[in-house]
Length: 153
Image (cartoon, rainbow, N blue to C red; front, side, top):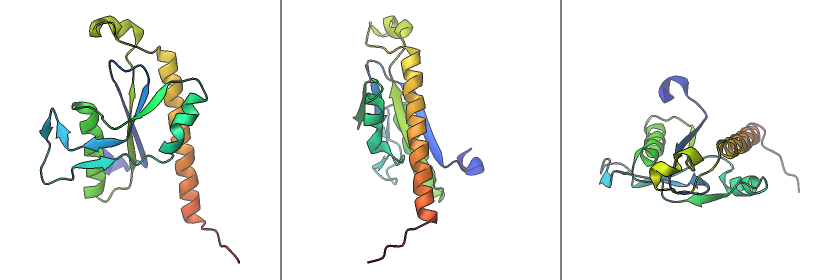
């Protein structure tokens, strides 16, 4: 799909019990289920979503609890982000990729031992803010590259 459609932005999401806030994943590691995916590959990749540094203030301004995370887990979430970034590098694709963990829903909490949760409406609002912020920053960055400013002294 990535090779065929060549998206410019890839924002993946997943649930993360027992989180009580939106988690913006910053790093994807070369591991799955505590095993190295491929020893010949890089140890890790940084998420390269544009505007990531402005996401916390954008979410907090809307009273949405959020934090940065350097541990996307050892299951599919980490693997998906890592594989996407590796695939882009290996195939000279230039998409920007990131992963956002959202808390489980209140109706799911009992399945995980009554851990923290977040209502669906807040998670949806958070994802809308994130998508809008990242897309706006991406458009700005593209515009800056295509129209470099000339500075005169």
